[in-house]
Length: 122
Image (cartoon, rainbow, N blue to C red):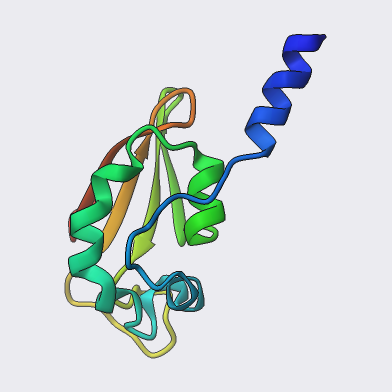
């Protein structure tokens, strides 16, 4: 019982991550990358992306807000998508190519195992 309580307390008390110079207010206000605000922080994101390795999914959500999309690949991994360029979910946007996005690969214990900035899908 004690271990369950400690585990829950640790999981529920995830801290925000150090995102360097990324403007997190703009990031959270730019759902699906519709306003192009996230793209302004691309250089900074490339510098600090490896700092997020090993972070929990809850810490990511506290830092960057709810992901634009979550994709479950199998029982052992999932991806959090945050669009940097406008996605097809933005009003009036019809993409001829996949938009640029940051993908956080989450392992079976919901920790970041890879961070990729790409226009490809997993």
